[in-house]
Image (cartoon, rainbow, N blue to C red; front, top):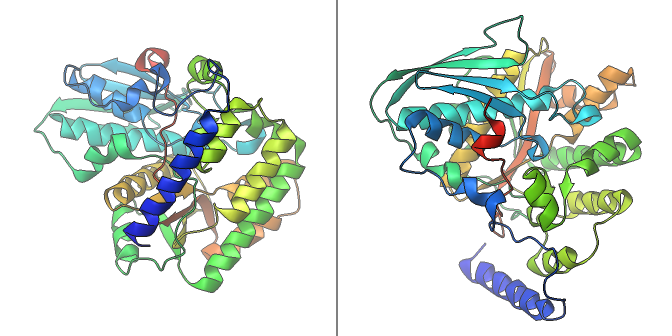
Length: 382
């Protein structure tokens, strides 16, 4: 896509939003992405922080399912402990807590990158105490030397982009680049770039979204994490916002001054967006593990996904999780349902009994993504 097209589209949408803004009443409780205390953690790093605090500040900016931020931290000068926060789970949307632990792996990877870049030599022990299942990892911090990296530099610039991507071929170097970012032998990358594979994957994502919407418990839990007003955003500092939906500027402007949509309206909008925007792009990716699907493996999946998302940010590419098929697979397992999506994912990952853990798309975005609210250090420190 040419720069001219990109500029023309942004100019048009910006002008439309500006024109619409004069029609709304001043003083409405409408948040703006990036403004206010809910977005302060993105002003990263703070040069005055101790290295261990800087490391946790990076972890706070990691990806997580539905922006639930399911983490807590114990912080000492020579040790950081990462805990799962059981209250911050997606219930029937993540019935096996697979996505929660992938999100914790994302936070762990950011933490490790930041520790290395700020003069520490971190050593991680995953799942160190079977008697304390909420203790996900302990990171011992020794003194080291600064080891900056492009991935670390990308941490405050990585945002999930749910907008439209160009239907452009994947870069020729993409398979090798993504493969190099999957450092654990427990994680396998499956890349789908052909037209037929992409169509089959997109059809599966849409079908799984329809199944989630028809499942009242899953739909209700998904809607619970939507934050519409400025008050909701500031009070919770988590979840999904209108700015993060990938909608155009004009629609975002109008939506902020309308009342909070009903669950049915949110479902309809999600399905429409999935069909129209969220299944565009250059490639789809699945990260899988063995069928054993342990928590330690899920952490490694999260670390690999976070590296990929950070790398994409350095390359002008966008990434968005598309875990609907895996969410339905988990639901099938816990509820004893017919394995419709389990069988579909098996077809994508091959016949060697791999478990699909993390699904996402990658491509060239039409527009930049907006930041999501973040809970500050004081809210996540034990």
